[in-house]
Length: 298
Image (tube, rainbow, N blue to C red):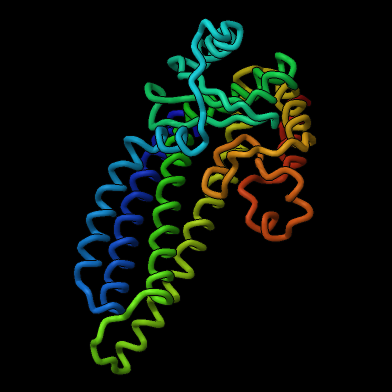
C-alpha cells in the first residue's frame, strides 16, 4: 500500500468515525431523554452531535493546541529548526507546517491538522535540548509521516470526539445521582431504561477510549517506518526513541485525551508501576518499535 492509499484510507476512516460518533451521541440522547422523560435532551444531544462533528473536522487542531498550551515558533526565533523541517518537507513532498513549542523538559512531539495545508508540528523544549540532529530529524520525519498519511487528521479528531462522549456521560451520571428526577410514574420499562442509561453512561467513555487505543497504536508503527524511509537513517529515530523513553521528566500538560498524539507516551514513570496506565497505554512498547527500526537497517 502506498502513502496515498494510507492517506485516502485515513480520510475515509475519519468520516466513518464522525458518522459513528453522530449516531452514537444521538443514541445516548435518546436513552437519556427516555430515562429522564425529557425529549429536550434528545434535541440538545442531536444539536451537539452535529456541531461537534463539524468542529472536530475543521477545528480539532486548534482545540488540541489550546489543551496542550502550545505556542507558535516563528522562523526568526529558531531558523535552524525550521531549516531542518524544510529539508524534510522537500524530501517528503509536503508543504511546510507551522511549528509550535511546549516549554516542557520531557522530550516529546506530536503533529495535528486536517490536511498537509493546515498541519502543525509541536515539539517540547526537552526534545530540542536533549536530541542530536540526526535524532531530531528522525522525530520530525515521524511527525511528517503522520501528516502525509493523514494520521494527524484521524488522531486529532479522536481527541475531540472522545472528550465529548466522556463529558456527556459524566453529565448524565452527575444528573442521575445528584440531580432531581422527573415525577413520571415508573413501570418495568422505565426501570429497565434507567439501568440501560446508567450502563451506557459508564461504558460509553470506555468504548471511546478503546477506539482511541486501537487507532493510535497501529499508526505509530506505520509512522516509524515511513519516517525512517524519509531520512534513510532508521537508527536516528531508534536512538531518539531510546532517549525519549528513558527520560523521566514529567509532561505537565499530558492528559488521557491527548496522550495518543505524542510520539511516545507522556506518562513517564507510570508505564511499569501503574497497571491501569499500562493496560490502557496509547502506544506500542518502545522496545518493539526500536527493534523494527533496527531491522530496517540490516
